[in-house]
Each structure stands twice: as structure tokens, then as C-alpha cells.
Amino acid sequence: MFLHATNSFKRTVVFFVLAVASLFRLAYGADTASLRVSYGGTAGYQLPLWVNKEAGIHKKYGIDLEILLIGGGSANLQALLGGSLHMTQTAASAAIQASSRGAPTVIVATSDNKIPFQMISRPEIKDPQQLRGKKIGIVRFGGSNDTAVRMALKTWKIDPREVTIIQSGGTAARMAALMSGGIDATVQSYPEIFQARKLGMNVLADIGDFGAYTNTSLIMTRPYLQQNRTLTKNMIKAQIEAIHYIKTNKAGTINVLRRYLRVGDAETIAATYDFFSQRMPRVPRAELEGVKNILEELGVPHKDIAEFTDFTLLNEIEREGFIQKLYGK
Image 1 (spheres, one colour):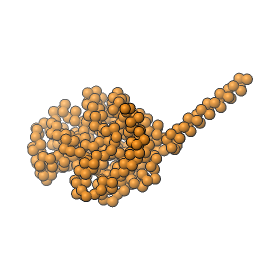
Image 2 (tube, helix red, strand yellow; image 1 turned 90 degrees about the horizontal axis):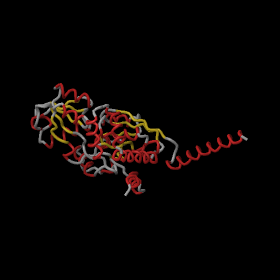
Image 3 (cartoon, rainbow, N blue to C red; image 1 turned 90 degrees about the vertical axis):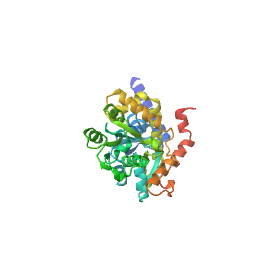
Image 4 (cartoon, rainbow, N blue to C red; image 1 turned 30 degrees about the horizontal axis):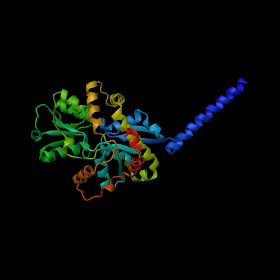
């Protein structure tokens, strides 16, 4: 009798597990698929991908997500085009530049429509015009750092030939170079901005104030998008839910920031959260003006924006009411 009951219980458990698995496949369209996605730097604008990974949101959409850091937008695009990645979350300008030269890259979602950098300088430099004859550090030529510096110089009517722009490495390397006097200015984001102020550095400008400029975006190749539309749609949903998590779960998001930024100071982390959580749109779509500004900078303002973006899946997600359900009325 006991043996019969035990076997019956086991069969019930097995049936329940299989039923749940079946419902999961019906909900998300396929068994779990692996995605290798890179990100282009350790700053708060990478939060959607970090939260997607750390909060396990990707699992709800049938995705086994692997994320890795590759410094700089152009390096991420090289890895993507070389087949080492499925997608990358990095600067839109790098993808648009590559596409304008014939690469099959495409932007499918955008979580930041302004350059999230501020120009910071050594204590003795208090005015942008004092940058003439000085050294400005960036990650590498052609990336979002380079773009931000040139946008600022243009606004200040400083000829780029009047300064020396130096490839000075990643975030930490540029901060060290600024503090030692190896460079006179650089562009940084939070949390470095908060730390720089505490060290006596000056903030000369918020580059985001100089206009719309499509920035942090989810990018892939067109062949991959064409062959994996369901998987891509699920990844976009996961990213949208990650943005919702960022906006509604401050404590959880701050824990993610601590893990990736490796900053223990609570005030610094809180300032970083406040800055980026307010900037991220509920619907991660590139603004028309922001893409146009990139095309103008690249000298191809006549190009059709559809050559560089594909928001058909995002449109579907919107029509289906997915975002409205997340946030409620």
C-alpha cells in the first residue's frame, strides 16, 4: 500500500515538472538558448544588461545569458563582427560608423539617448577655454569618449588641433592619469564624476546638455537578427524588464552597482543610481534627433536611419501591451 502510494506520488511530481516545462516552452517559444553579450565599459549606463544578468530576468525568457566586458565601442563591434559575440550593449555611434562602412550591424534597442559623460579637469583648469594647449584623455579614437570630447570642443568653439587628444585607457587608467597630471582633462561618467569632485577636480560640462545623441544600445548583425527574431525579441523584453527593475527596485539595483563598479562608498553608489535610473526610457527606442546627430558627425546626414536601426520587434512588444503591463496604468 505504502509502495503504491509512493509510486503514485512520484508520478504526480514527474507530471507536474513536465507540465511546468511545457508551459515554459509555450510561453517563451523555445528551450533555453545561450546568448553571449558584451558591454563596453564599467559605468552606470550598463545597468540594463547587468540587472538582466544578476536578477535572473533572462531566465524568464528562455535565455542563458553570458555577459563579458570589452572596453570601448569599436572593440565590441570587432568582436561582434568576428563572430565571438551574439550581441553587444555599447555605443550606438560605433555601430552606425561600422554600418556606414558596409558592416551588417543594426541597433534594436536603446537605453540612453544622451551621452552620459561629463568633462572633468584638473583643479587648476576652471574654464573650458583653458583647455587650449592641454592633453585630453579618451579610451580610444572612434569611440564614445572621442565623440563626447569632440562634441564639447565644437560647442566651446575650440579647434581639436588646439588640444592633444590621447588614448589613455579605460576608466581607472584615465582617472589615475588625471590625478597624476599625465592628462589635464577627460570625460567620465558616474561614479567617477562623484569621486572626482571629492578629489577637487572640476566638472566643466555635462555632455548630455549639448543635445540628443543615441548612445548605449543593444546591437547585433542583421543576419543574426533575421535568423533569430524570436530569441532577439525575448532578449529585448528581458532588457525592458531590467529597466523596469532599475526604476522600481532601488535597493536591488544598488547591490548590482556595487558588484560591478566595486565601489563601497554608499553616497557614491546612490548618486550613480539616481543619475542613471532617471535617464533610462521605459521604451528603449533611439530618438530620431540622436541618430541624425551621429550621421551628421560622420558626414553622412543624407543616410536613411532605417539603414542603421530595426525597431520592428520593439514595435511588436509595444503593440502587445508588454510595457504597459509592467508599469500598470
